[in-house]
Length: 214
Image (cartoon, rainbow, N blue to C red):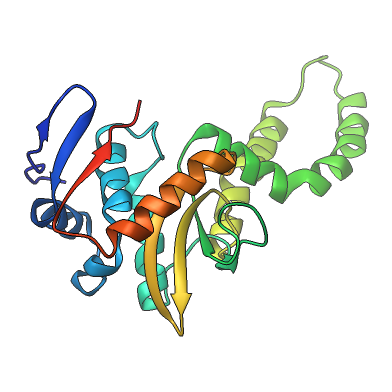
């Protein structure tokens, strides 16, 4: 994607963020203009940081895809949104996004193929028993690899069943305010601070300060 990144003034620990510049960046990513005032500066800055370094929250375009899926009620490849039942985010909503990492891919692969792999083991043992070469047949290896990788991922994506990290938002009669991104293993205190900052920024002024991620 070709566009100019927003320019921010930065000290050692803090980065001054101009919301107008950040909004232009978000529009270039493909977020709808109608949603910009309902996306916290915390989440916008998380998107910006992740665009620069995918290791922070994963594939930024998958995050945008799922926000748009919520806004337009179409195009999602992940599990349906649901409420947090406990912890710092209790009462708020979460929407999964597939972060594109190997760990996330593996988690979905095993969720899809766990039962199939158990049934596969005795079948492979029978087939391998008749293999005179002593080597596992290449054709069978290829079929298994496709089954537990491409087909498993595509099957879950088509059903809208992929799991991943979280987009945290509030939902009042279908009007969503997008608060922050969070990992499955986010510590309670860290998530609580992000939610507090996100909710605060939705009511705040046009220029904010936000601590830079490590």
